Amino acid sequence: MQIASGTIVGGKVVVDGLSLPEGTVVTVLARGDEVVVRLQHQQGA
Image 1: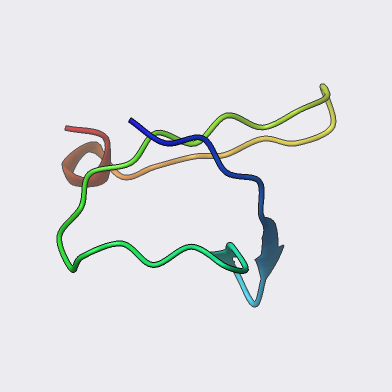
Image 2: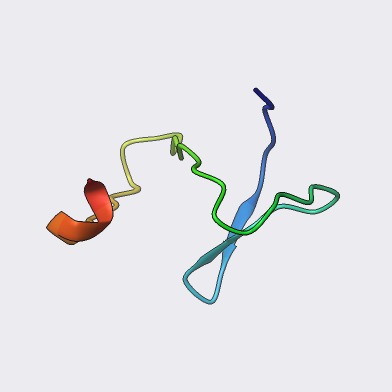
């Protein structure tokens, strides 16, 4: 397990200095109440 911080650029998560293999499953936590992330049902599964 790894922990990294990133930012949203163009609607995508950008993490500098971290390289993960294609298909890696990740969990995204957003700080603050002002950020709302909505996923399609297929994306949340």
